[in-house]
Length: 211
Image (cartoon, rainbow, N blue to C red; front, side, top):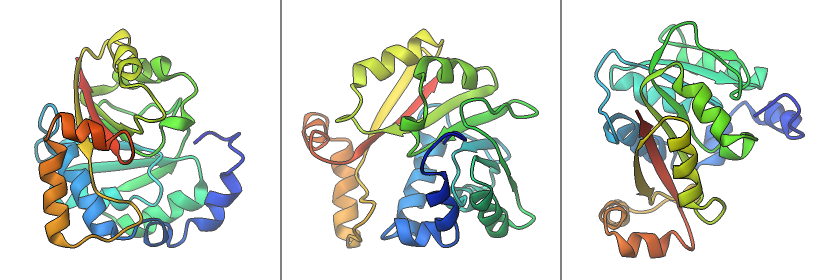
């Protein structure tokens, strides 16, 4: 999110308890995201650093720290950053910054930006920017009913990120499913044509992109 975003006040007011209100089953949702962040594309190793842009209250950070990764969060909303640092304690940090222009003090293994593609006015410029400090892979998600897959992939390749892997993500945001249904969803994520048919109506892609 950028400083000019009209929703800034809304996010500031909602920072406390953000994850609990936004996600029907936050533990499952973020655990699955963390699993894919590690395994999709070039695999991350313990000790690798993940930079999360538009981190919210850093619920993903907890899952990454549990996997022995280092984590740093960035969000434009000071209240979200305060909530992040409260959650992270002395295990990691978050700071205020604009996802479109932030540069970390040193290169990171992976950069993640989830549920925030619509805050990026120039995708190609953003992909080029993050590629400059991302050593292993860029991870993000997008709604294929809002953005054409071919256009997103073309922007990545133009930005120098020629290797791209997409994975459907069939974990609901606002609905708690029984374990059996989640297991079926994981199978369907790899079902090819059927997964693409489902994505015409619901859910999103997770993307890993690298050089």
